[in-house]
Length: 336
Image (cartoon, rainbow, N blue to C red; front, side, top):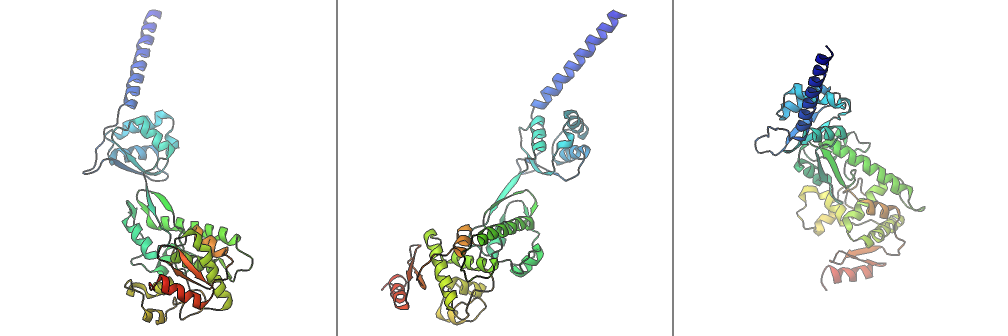
């Protein structure tokens, strides 16, 4: 009897060892995948709240060529079935079961990126999002900043300038509206940081006015040392009640009718954004300012200048008087 029991024990140990060896070998062997036509990865979407059984079924249906029951048994035997995270995942050829489990436990989603550039308008932003890879376009049709602000639930009624320029990562099949809401929250945070550092005697009444001024600075120059000086010119003009006379705002007001050549008649065409015909700041930002322009708007340089003109090399020439400015215009703009 004892001898028979010993034989059974040896046989059972051998079977367990064989099974363990088989499982170990399976965990180290690449998973067989049914790749989609023209694709080189299997996409798997795991929704929040999915059970281990549902996750195993999702993996099998997506293209992991292993029976769902076997995947479920593996997930449960791993002891990590409750640690799997929801998200969008990619499974590439050569991925082993162990590597896939690690990916799901760590939440290593298949991420894509979209970059929003300083100085872009809502039109530019929407076009970039609609070209972005694996981003679901759930935005309102067209390029209307008012409709966009309403759709996103922004506190501002106009979406222009309300998104912080940066690179945003997103899981595959994310909604474009969620990327924009993150960009809007980022702008709110950076604008609050800048406003908290504002100079004491600014002629700006609110963070919104600082954002508008920063957008003008952003569109006027890409030359870092000139930002605070240009903001200083605008602040001087606001204090004196002078019109800002900034071309980018006029161009923004012209909209799609602007053909790339700003003419004298354009400067005389009155719109809410024409800072030649109307005093003060335009009603909304005209583009997305970056951090440098936000900071320049709230910490403008102390300068006697009331005028500036582009030199043509990316820098600007600053003048205190209209005569000095006219000479600079003749030199740098008219070539005389």
